Amino acid sequence: MTVDNELIRLCIDESPPRNQPLVAKYIRSFAFPVLSKLSPFNISKTGSYLEANKTAILQKYGPGAENDITSVLTKLNTLITDILNNKPFRELVSDNVDVEIWNKVLKDYSDEDGNRPTWLFTNWLYCECYIHRRIFEAFETSIYLKNYDPFYEQKMQGLVSCEDAMELLGKFLIKYFHKEDIDIKNLHEDLPKMFKCALWGNRCDLSQTGGDAIAQTECPLVLVDALQHLMLVDESPKAVDFLCASLNDATNDDKILDIILDNAGYELFTDLCLADYLITFKFVNTIRFHGKVIPWFISDVTTQDFINTIDYLSYKIKSDVLKELGKRWENYMKSGQWKFECEQFWTLPFSFGQIKSLDNELYTKLEESFLIISKGDLNYRKLVGDVYWNPTVPFIETVGNFKPSKLIALRTLKSDITCGLPEGLAEHVSKTDPNWLKEGKYAVIQVDGI
Ligand SMILES: O=P(O)(O)OC[C@@]1(O)O[C@H](CO)[C@@H](O)[C@@H]1O
Figure 1 (cartoon, rainbow, N blue to C red):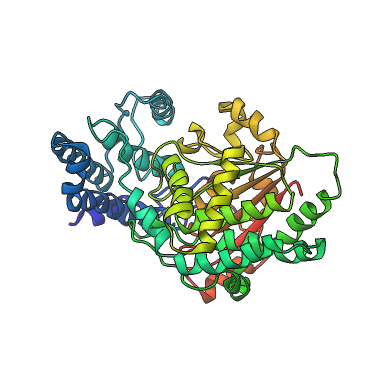
Figure 2: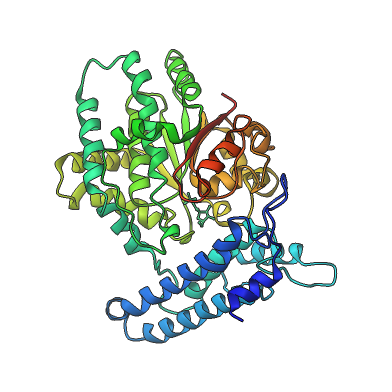
């Protein structure tokens, strides 16, 4: 019997129950294949990357790093074995500031007899976050590779491989920014396109491919129209009306936009384009980008990714328009109009509904916000509590008590969770396209408080 079969033997051959948080034991949920196939694949690819890049790593970190590589590989292999054998979770052992929180969560999820949670039977959001935290633990418990991001090069490669598409969007924007006669009608017409470029940027997510870059070659603006029929909910008109109306209020010159980022590479580029558009036309005055404090879900944006993306565009890329964009973004960072922040909460296994009770400082910060944009699938899962909602439950209900400000969610669908869909749509799409929830093919733009 293979280990995969062993996991299957423990599972239930059913869909997960509606309106409950996901758990991987339901074979017909996306969580089961992510746990049994995709996660072990991603972890073993991380190990293969280390082995393949050993010489370069030793050159950079010195010969002492050889033992580190060996110990990281052992820890990654143990992690795969633990998952595939549904072993109980263990405490984290590093001296990082978040370890106390993770170990408290482990205790909270253990039963009265002290039996610890296992991969198949515990809350899936906790489980998947724990997998990524354990990957990082393998590195942070080493000597030389404590701060090593094994996904950094792939993330930058993801950016480089999309240069053609970036150039096309860059040309459009630079021309636009140089025009002197942009009026409210133009803004009203073009702002939805900027939202949707950032939305579809979320398709380029390396956690689906074990780090292999997904090249985006078509013109992002052409794609916006071509993919419109794949948008299951499009509330962008509400967001655009709200933002355009706010331009009339000259008294408010302290409008902060918070963008809760997702992936580096091409997606981050499209987020920065949207941010530039919003700040150039004074929809907002300050933008705070929220990234991750540790490598997370393979391709999420860390400080290193954010800084080096802007640096790459400003100084290293061939294209003049992209250089010009890079320089604009560097200036926004220098002037403080743009800020990059990475709070610990985003790499903990909690939903956004828990921010208020668990991290009041962060919640209070988000209350200063004029508008919050949440990017991507994992942030969406956290927004709606990773609950397998009945698809017609309104989005504003699913976000629970996460109401610090007005909110826009931009998400391509890569997991089972849907909400706020019109009656019958989920049934209709699933009949014509059984994989509709898995591949980032469909998307939603949903708003709360607008
Ligand atoms: O947040 P992103 O980057 O849009 O997507 C992340 C994600 O799709 O990767 C995992 C594995 O497929 C999913 O569980 C998760 O939701």
